[in-house]
Amino acid sequence: MHHAAIIGPGVQVFPQLGWPAASAAEPTGGLGWPSVEVAAEVSRETSSRPLAPRQHTPLASEIERQVRLARTLRSGEPLPKPAHTRVFAVANQKGGVGKTTTAVNIAAALAQSGQRVLVVDLDPQGNASTALAVEHTEGVPGSYEAVVEGKNIREVVRESPQLPGLSVVPASIDLAGAEIDLVSLVARESRLRRALTGYLGETEDAGQRFDYVFVDCPPSLGLLTVNALVAAAEILVPIQCEYYALEGVGQLLRTTEMVRAHLNPDLSMSTIVLTMHDARTRLSAGVADEVRTHFPNQVLRTAIPRSVRVSEAPSHHQSVLTYDSGSPGALSYLEAAREIAWRGSGSGGSA
Image 1: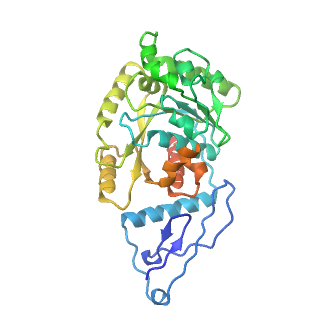
Image 2: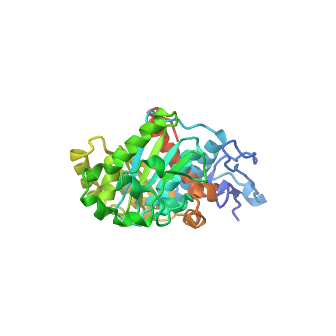
Image 3: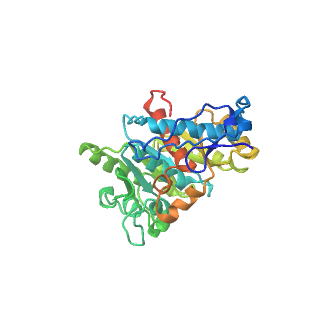
């Protein structure tokens, strides 16, 4: 019978994999993350046998990654602040790939780590606003007023009650008519950039510079998404680890090239996050390998696993970081955020 060491909720490390024993439970670290608790009970038969060599299976690799991340969390290593505000458009016209979930949880992870973060909800469904517990009922001023009516973002931005340093421009159902309303406006593709540039300049002059901005786009390539691509310097693309993962990414690349050629020459697809990854299946591993082959420099090392906790969190008006900070999904988003931060620092540090 194989006995296991327990590392955080739902994660087990098996002595048969040949990994060194972890230390005893330690108190919670200064960042407020739960400590790693390790309890190993090895039977007489197992303990009398030599440990098996390390097995490089997908499941073993995932468990090893969780152990490494947990140790990093305990170290309390601070994240570097970027030299200037990094503006991301979180885009993928294919629905159901974890786009809003990724935007919300990476933003929350960076705020948890001491960064100042702004989330602009540009999706009429308002799911990012829901997850960050910001009111976005009909008539509540938000991104529609900023983009279509030209209101200063200062008048519509809200602080998320979940985490200090995390601000939100909410999206109400009013945004559903923005595509039509924008058609007749002057410089319709640059409305968000104008509003965002002015607000970010104000906050920087006041000594309250934002480190990151994440614009959550709708699942389409319409005028709202184009506004996000014109306003951003980087694109973050969540790609689901399923058969149709790359379908549509080609069209996003073509749209990106058109925006770069005519509206925003500084735009780049800098980051790809693999979502809904299942380490137990060959399908997920195969899709991940294919995406990494096509985009070797853009794909994060961290893949976000399928997680019930990640799906449950929005129903409680929370990110998974505040809903269950010790879950594999929360740890993975934290690691992805750390990787984004270190990549942008230019120091080549490890996440």
